[in-house]
Amino acid sequence: TTLDVIVSSWDLTNLPGLPAVVNLSNATITAATMGQFEMTAFGNSLFYVYNYNNDLYLRRFDISGDSWDASETVVSTMNEVMSSPRLEVDNEGYLYLGYQQYNSGSGNYQFVVRRSVVQEEVIPGFHAEHYMTGTPRSALFDHIDIAVAGDSTTGDLKVVAAYQDPMTPALDIWTTVEHDGDWTDPAWSGTYNFINRGVATAIRGPDIEFSPNGVFVHAVWLDDRTGDDNLFTSISFTGGLNWRPDKQISFGTPVVEDVPQIVTGSAMGNIA
Image (cartoon, rainbow, N blue to C red; front, side, top):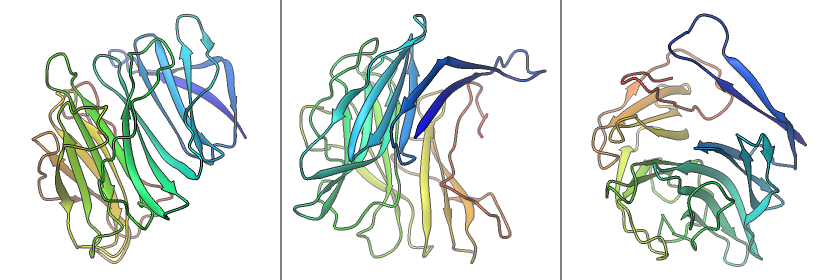
């Protein structure tokens, strides 16, 4: 499979006309990614993580040098399968990698979040596994996501992890927040809460994103509480510690092909 990586840049001060589209040196990444990849950017670097043959690989694009670094294996463990990579960056350039980890020996799943040892500009190594869900699950997580805001220097780092827990009796969407935890410790020290609880028999999502203020967190997902798969959203004004009642934002019988995604703009209130 060949993936052409294209960056689209919007100048919000001059909206008329189409956004500029730049192909990064016609760079192609040749790998069977199975549709599981994520990108993020900081400073002079564009980072791309992808799944290939049950392992996770990371590649960096040097924006000023207009060139790709070689791919690096970031997670590869015998008897374990890695999937659903999620990639975020904080204000200092540290990367946060979230993924599902399946142990073929025990048959258990874990939601893992790891922080890079160094900041951007190089392909970083990552600290050891940080087990967000604590107790292993015997079923696959439907969807996972992470969102990051702030940084360790100012003491306001917030890492939010969201997931639909396969082991709860009802289909609940849970979130947990860790405030600048010890990334060398496998234990997650965050507190847990839920966005919605027991209102649906099928859920796809959630996807979460911080607002530019680094405090508000937005979530979007699909569920079938109305009889059809419709979009719902919720907001946290406390960095993911608790959530406002959710709201339905699509109606009727929409055809949605994939998990919805949410993006916040640089101006307050801009959400897509």
